[in-house]
Length: 362
Image 1 (cartoon, rainbow, N blue to C red):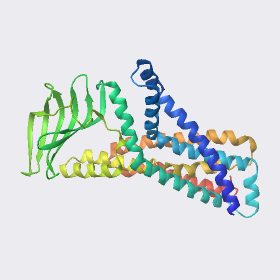
Image 2: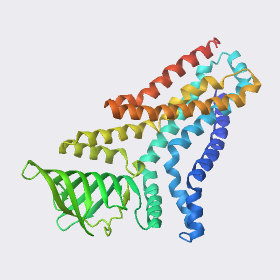
Image 3: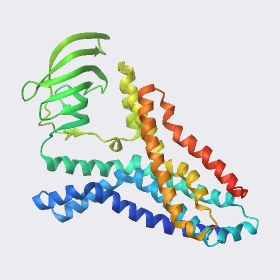
Image 4: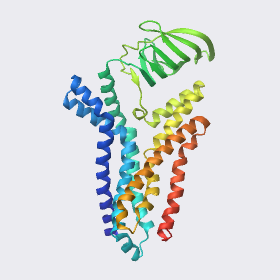
């Protein structure tokens, strides 16, 4: 049994690392090639700086590269063994396909846990560095920036400014949320919610349709408009850009969600909880995809290996399309558990196909 386990894992990791190399190369280059060539031609960054940027930005794509690599590893290894009738030989010795699935499940679970740990506690730091390089090269914010955020250090308090959209060219912000924290106590002293903000002068913004919650006086104030000061163009914290979801770990998102709830902004809190669930769904999608692609890998027809790979990658793409659909469904309905629907479907359908394959009914 140990010899069989080593043999299966050897074949799996050979295909897995080949898939990881291929998908990393394709995804990163297709998404970043234009930008890095532009930097080189314009002299913004040198060759080694571009290489550093590509290394730093690569963890952003782990949510797609690793699951696809697992799919490639399972189909490439099991499909090869099955097409060479080695799976049939193993079954003839009384070792079922489910036993083989269990061995793969353990190693894919380990890969998923490692993926989650890297995403939450390692990758986010490098992604921040890459995005700092990206926005530093642009010199200024132009066009629309979604999910914009930055912090401004005042004399007595620190202001954390969030906006669903920032139109840099026009000096406009939509759906603005400001949290003020006292420097000494570190407590939230005031929150300000505004439907939109217009830049009046260099450091002065006009906020419209404003709701102010004063935590000291414990009262809520509604006003048509107020002036608010923050130095967006010269803030020291370098947050003149949007914060990507992968820059913030799930603990930080949970803290933000609690702050929104305490401030009475249920919609923003719900948005944070959606991101928290996605933080778990993407890294562990490899497990759910294993349930779907393993049955397709078992075939006694030698010519079907390539078709199995194509079919399995198609299943992975369909899975991600379904995840995108349920994100929209979750936003529309407010039912956060819809996000897990593709995973429940994957386990249910995959479990049925594995059972039928093991009984030689399909």
